[in-house]
Image (cartoon, rainbow, N blue to C red; front, side, top):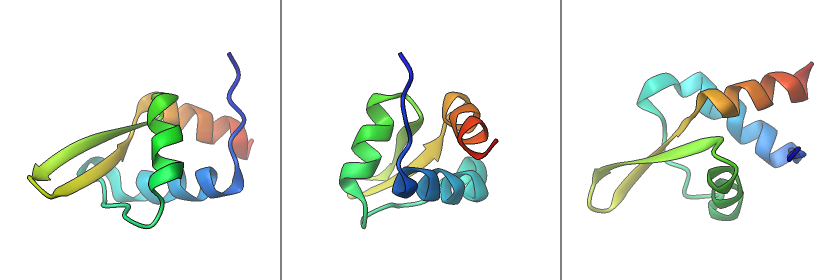
Length: 69
């Protein structure tokens, strides 16, 4: 199934790609993150009980590349 990325999703995937393997928190975009997680483009890493960091997956990087190309 093809998944069409919105501008906000592309922007967030770019930010996560730039953050690398350490990821980053994304408190400002919970709905965008939820959609990207359902598509397996982003995964969540729990650092502490109340701190989540999000990391782009290989599938997400490929989708970003396709969207940019």
